[in-house]
Image (tube, rainbow, N blue to C red; front, side):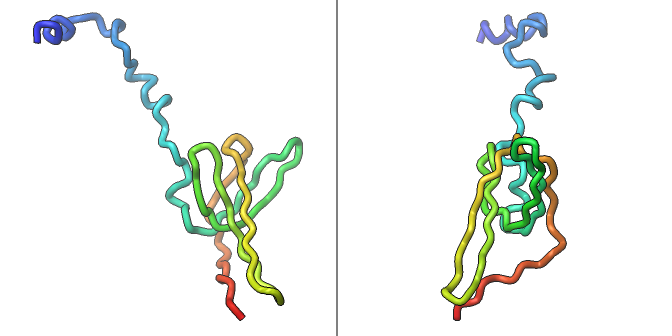
Length: 105
């Protein structure tokens, strides 16, 4: 108890946690978690090229996002998933286009 009382009057610069940097260092892990399960439009960088993509936001790991598309055809339904690292994302927004789920048959 005496240790805690002696620390209360110490100089703020002696603190181990700087309140001005804490917000920057402790960002939420998943930036796009509010859009999970929704159709999103993404513009991302692949080398020197900007590529557009539209798909359902299937997962957000905190370092990259995972988009998913379903394709139906003569031989059944196929699922295509791809990963886009955060550092490659130029723009991400919820899409206005509705995507229909695949049908069996």
